[in-house]
Length: 314
Image (cartoon, rainbow, N blue to C red; front, side, top):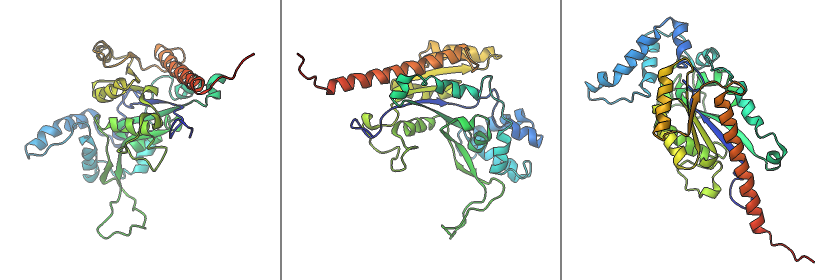
């Protein structure tokens, strides 16, 4: 802590979507491959669920209803033995775009120069996804990240009059533990902003002055692949942060989608999801990290000078 506020505000945060941003696939693909289930058929069923349940006057969210449909497959015996541990193991099979996970370390190296070390600047990576938290934990990128916001499952739920001091039972996944949709992703951004993940005594609903927040949004870069992330793109841009839309290099339609996001002012830049050294996307990300770092150093220098009263000179 320093005299300016609760936190030093020395953190630059890169916030990443996962599917189609870090991976060319839906992360759930290894689940379907493991159990011999047609992936396209599963997603077709999911896409039809809102209309199906509407006939019973029940509303479901398209972003997240796949979670309960996975549980239906488990209960029907189509995915026997699917536990959180199994999901984590299957996460190791999730494909990543070229250059990952090494790109996460290269981006941290932008802060290697002495002037940034003297200012104690740090770069943190976060994943905010509507996907599955245990699969992200099992993926090759997880050791490089500082936090994950995603959806998850309970295996054996607590029963009435359960022992609060007991240990939850293990088994196949059976209930949704928590979920993130494309709107509530913005909550994760504000949790990072306020430092909820770094201080257990802080809630996202707490009123915290801008100078007391751990990561100002202007110190953030949000990276995602499409229109479903417009709420998050908007929150970050509106509050001074940077946004990047990425697309799979081999999918021209997704490039057109990213280009439209840029033309309509939804994102600051777009590029191929190619995270190899010296790629266009990596060059842009490294430049923005450097720009943010220089601004932080400049702001500190000006703040120090404004507080120092120069002594008389001969």
